[in-house]
Length: 40
Image (cartoon, rainbow, N blue to C red):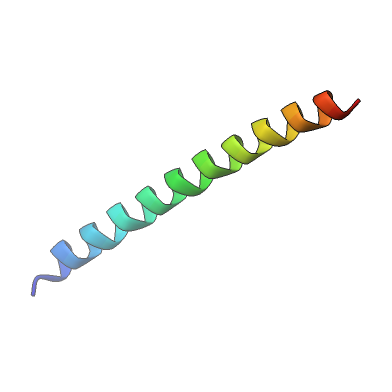
């Protein structure tokens, strides 16, 4: 196994996980805002 290949794969996985977490965060935040506005 080449260390450069392993590090590149790890960086790609971390970047993908960060993007997914940010998308889920913004999605839940937008839903929470809509629910809060509808309750008022």
